[in-house]
Image (cartoon, rainbow, N blue to C red; front, side, top):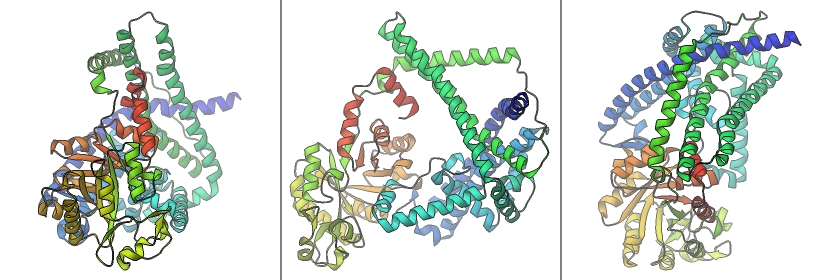
Length: 587
């Protein structure tokens, strides 16, 4: 038992002793990476401007593969990923190796060597590893990823289609499983390349061999490592947040003072937990590197002794933190209602007419949105064989009406014989009549027939109905929106994008529809500064809806309309602590 305790202490020791070095490594690597990426961003911006575009986005990307500027942008983007892998990931693995083997100059040495590792990945397999780390690992939540893309996920509008189509869903599950197994089998590839100077090919082979022999032990120790870290975080939450908040009501203080102390407790907890988050990634990489050495050699590593921090540094650091917390608490308390608004000004727009509570893209659906009190209703129009415009989202009527034919191959009479959840397929004219003076209609130009003729016809129909002020024409195709905004400046237009680079706010439209991941606070602010409005599509989960209802976005397009209104109502009932929690921790 005593021997086991000694062994446990010896394995924990490198993590404790690494704390000051990790802080220095993080500070220097972030600075170096920031400078290099600033240079690359300027180069990409200049290249983009030379094409006459202000931004490249999901609806305007084909030029990337057909012009020298586009190809150069792809190369620069890849170089950015390589730099992130080098300084955000490789430097920490090199640091772990040096720390565990008691080498000197571990911070400066790790950073210098990490820059040299970039060239090691300039091969097909190396590029594949970088793309896996940057794009697939965060989606799969397997292995290691870079901070640039750690929040990456498959957009909701794509997964909704996948999960409602059995074949797509099966292929999706199989694909994710295959890529997850690939990631697990090659979990030690970076250690092989960086610590043993193996070629990419040999490192891949070695990692698979190591995992075949040790996968049970690897999973056991990773579960234990994760459990210990989770327990540590829970302990910190209890000590710095829950206990102080439980004691606060017992203190004989005024409501104003109680609010100030609540703010102080929450800011202190945010700093403590944020600091823990800084060490989560490096500690995980050190743990993985430790296992790599265990599996690759029978010799026990001679781990470094605990470091002794000078008391004066600890006192000064604590005093600085206390002063910072007090200052921030005072400033926040002065502008509490502005920083943590009690109500949401963000509007709710029903997706596909009435969301999940009304028959999709039907008159009944839009009437349901009106009944629920939605600000707007988003619909999808496609052109029929005989030139009419009907509502349908997919390429065919298979999912909604059980007919595998496409709208453009059918006449209006044939389409009117179909039903969606017992409701007839609606025309654009019918929808406008149902919406008149009741709700804003966001008309998405959709499908294979989404062209300039559709834009012209939609404008004509809307103007004939006298509803120019009540409608917004939107599309995923920027060229089509640019045409519509230019040809009909009196009409409101919106461009939907789930990925963009450049001055997105300067795009030629009135609304910008951002996918959840790209709807950051800075992006919303930049768009507002250009005098345009922001729609976020399609936040359907409670936590996601709450996040954007509390943001500066002008509206959310969602399938769960009643849920969104329920959240808006509950926002008014929050305590000071709940308002702070939402603001600081982004609930």
